[in-house]
Image 1 (cartoon, one colour):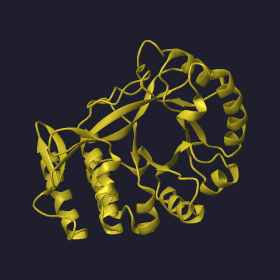
Image 2 (cartoon, rainbow, N blue to C red):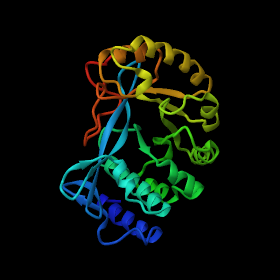
Image 3 (cartoon, rainbow, N blue to C red):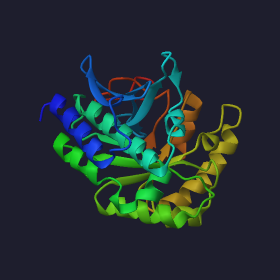
Image 4 (tube, rainbow, N blue to C red):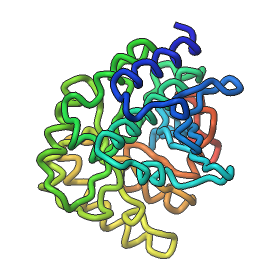
Length: 284
């Protein structure tokens, strides 16, 4: 199906499923060969950050980031969009709206072969919608030729609320073929029992665990101990926020599976070709 028809299809489905959230100033549109979103005065676009294999430095997939611009043309934090949600229904709509935008822009990318696309899911959207959350998105994926096996759903655990509703929702998504990543693990809690209950396929460590250049010896000790427990749960480990060669060296030394951060590659409009080195600085 041509992309323009896919955009029209997605807009129609959103209007059908979320009639109170959609209107003349809300929807997806083609702009200069890309898909952008409009939510009132806000313009939404996609950026893609590469995730590389630790051993080889080759790109394996990308995480989609939301690029948000307000009415004055100023970029805003992605979280600002969800602050506009006045109800749980608004939040579920915005969550799916962003993922649809990213999937359509990912479809434009060449040289992705079977590279994965990692998409952030708002935890509250999972709590509210449960199993029903994602049926429309799954239909979109099939029309794009993307199987759930190529999608990683990322959820940030707040470390405080009841873990069981999120665990049930994540298991529902895994049963449908998606891989699940727990983002920023260690920011609020490094509770391994909580981690075992959530059962993610992928654990993405928070920036506080990799440390800064002056604290790498402490970071090394913490991550070595933590990684042994995470491997016991059969989860892949991702070291995020790699900004310098020292952090890269520590991540490889402690046995991280995947790497992500500005040293690996900054978020950009275009994806990097999969199975090629992210850049010469990290090539094995």
